[in-house]
Each structure stands twice: as C-alpha cells, then as structure tokens.
Length: 389
Image (cartoon, rainbow, N blue to C red; front, side, top):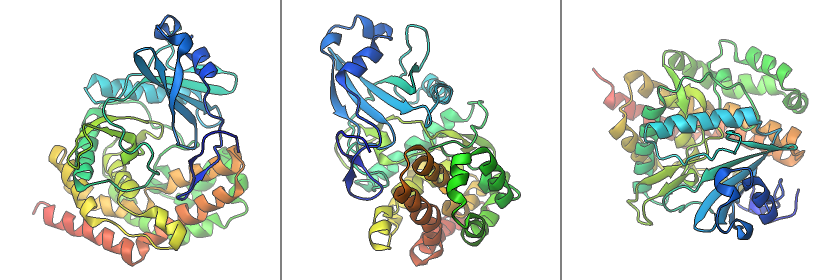
C-alpha cells in the first residue's frame, strides 16, 4: 500500500491506495509535454483540484488557469501505452459520431499517451456535466429510476455509435473486459490455454481448484449462454457501464447523461454482453453480499434501464433470449483479470481471494439462488412478452 488520500476498497470502507497519488509537480511535468500545457496561462500555478478515489490507478482533475483537465497515471503492468492508444482510438471513433466522450489530448509528439519510466499517463478534457456519482463506490445503484432509464438510453446510443468500430478484439489482460472463455467451445481448455500465457494468474490459480469451480459454477450458465451469443454479431462496448462512469445534466431524478468516460475495460464483445454488464454493475446490491452474504436486485431499476435502452436500440429476439443467460457469467473474465491484478501486480492475497471467492464464484452462485433466479426470470418474462410471434 502507498500513502495518500484514501480510496475505494473492495467493500464499503475506504482504504489506503495501491498507487501513490498524483502531485502538482508531477502533473506539471506531464503537461509540459502537451501543446496546450506548455504555455497555458497559470500552468506554473496548476494544482490538483480533486483526486479520484478509484483504486486501480492514480487520477486527478487539474486546474490550468481557466481550463480543467483529467490526468491519469497507470502502472505499465496494468496498462501499456499500446493498450491505452486502442482505448483512445475507440474514444475518437465515438466522438466522430457525436457520442459525448471527452476528448483525449495529444502530446507535442502527436501521441495520445506519455510514458515516463514504468508509468503511462493520459490526459483528457474534463467531462461535461455534473459528476453526481464521483464519490460513490462502484456497483452502487442509481439514485433514481430516471437515472437508470437515462443510462440505458445513453448505452444504446453508444452501441449504435460503436457498431462500426473495426478494431480487433483485445486479448485477455489485467483489468479488462472480454468474453472469450464464455463463448469458447471448451471453456475449461480455453482457460487452461489462457493460463499458459498469463503466468501471474496461473501462479495464483495453481492454489485453487479452478477447473472444478469452473465446471461446477460457471459451466451450466455458459452452456446456456454460449450458443445464443455465437449467433450474434460482435461489436465494441464500454465494458464498465455504471453510474460513476457517467456525468449528468442536473441533480434532479430525471437528469439525462451528459458525458461518458473511462473506456479502460472496453473491448469487442457483444452489445447484449455490454448491456448485461450494465445490469450486473448497477442493479444488484453486491456490496451487501460481501458484508452480509445477501444481495438483492432492484427489478424496477432493471426495467427502467432496459426501457431506456430499447427506446433507442430495440433488442432483437436473439438478444432478448441471450440477455438473461449471459448475466450469471458476464463478469467471469473481468473477475479473473482482477484476481491477476491483486495477486500478481499489487500482491494483495486477501483481495485476490475476495475477487475469486466473492466475485468470480460468489456472483455466479447468487444468480443460482432465489434472488438471482428472480432477476433472471424477470428478464426472461420480459423477453417472452416482447419476442415477435
């Protein structure tokens, strides 16, 4: 752990950060590599106005005279400059189609990221709108059904803008969404091949009965979801759609989404996989699961988010069928990537165990229980009502 402002942990408590916070001196040095940073009035007095409480990188809003920018620092074991450039290419594609994604700043060398030693930096314009959820823990619910509906509509608009982004699927990596195990003909064998390429993850899983766990908990829903997903067209999605990755037009319960940010988990999956991620991230009280062993789904929020989504991009019959089936395993590969982050990058055995037991396995187990089954049945009934014929 590193000294600095407390950040969000894996539960409801604030914890010491894994990465030291950005400093005024550091961001001034970074911004000196950017055309609008070198001679920006007030640069020598540029200060950090807010530190992000997100735990897996260091980020801050920085004032440069009348301008505010968002500066983010990654350890290269978490994000390489090549990975960040792909995220920025996706952002440019979305912006070209009028999606409300903040612009990425380019260095004087024309690069969208800056490498300094083992650090990778990126600089964005500040997102428009009000950051109502910036201090909320990840996986906390929407403040209102209006926000859930607006978020669903915004996700549908993003998917329509993203549909023509042709970049190839990103391979499995630390803290990145994907769906290769879930769609594989042989999920256990595919994960075994993956471990041969990810020695850090393999070292941790060597102490767990991962193949038995995959067969017991994940293989039944995978067998239901995979054939349905294989019939759908792949496309890029956000990968981490939840309220604190959105800004809003007002503080009211019927506010609309003003901007979308944090494309760090984005990948080429399926629109319905990304929609399932949005439901999984924001409509279940997962933080209660770690504390009490119980979690509940907000079915009104599920309906509102889906209503908003389908108001802008109606789901096909095949997507309607796939949505409920992929939900129990939509988190699987991100959970594995989080295990690797904690076990191999920051060396936190307790958090690696929490990611494996409570997240990777616990979320799928929850969907097999009463509350999770009720959520899946709710979505299935909706699909039956809407299915043509």
